[in-house]
Length: 310
Image (tube, rainbow, N blue to C red; front, side, top):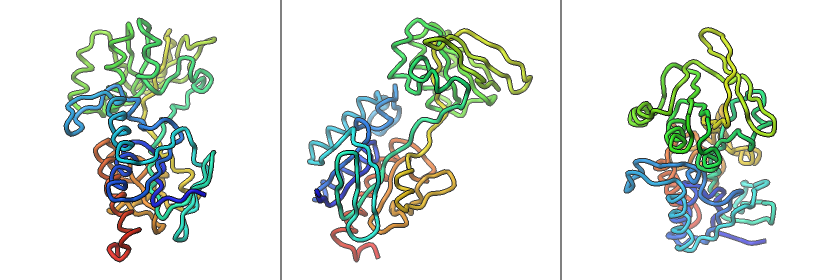
């Protein structure tokens, strides 16, 4: 069984920031992710206002973080799902699809996954016109008519990206106003090939081998309409990937986010958490990085100077 000082579960912004700082602190560090490293920011068309970058593509920022972490000496295993963890006792174990590893401390930074809208046909046409990533699948619908579902920052950013590819982008939002930053809304409303349907939800997604139409319902009038469409991009938020952590005894809140204190500690000694998987109220790249750094330094204190944390 391989032994490490620290195992970081999740190679998104929080996990990579943690890896940079654990290695800098002299800790032998393994970072594990069930996908390719980089986290959900790698799917973002644009990341705006990350300190030092007024605007940068999510993929480029993720690559820079990955390269930085690797260059300092962290070992990164991607496409290696974590199956279970034993976080009690002085020695922690992490079991993946490939092996079981042990460590003195574990930092959980598995992030979140895209929420679904629960409409009829959503799962049937997933990957056949239903997408949760504009950067990944937008180019397949160049010159087509597409829908974006949502009203927050991610929905607006995805809409702006798709407006440069699709012939028409229709935004479906269940409320009567966006919840996004004012600058994003301003840019979106200036696009001539973007229109917004307020107080509207998707009831059903229809098609054959691909998406062909959607049935919409206006929540105010209860009127339903069916419109032809080539793709549906769902951008209605995310939910934490906390199932494995919760099964290991890590305490979560009513929304399944991991409970942490100001030092990123969980209820289990030597187990820390950082990023979108935690109950920190702000879900941004910058806050994830800050949490990852804090978790790394607290893990160092736990391993090398346990008296410091008392």
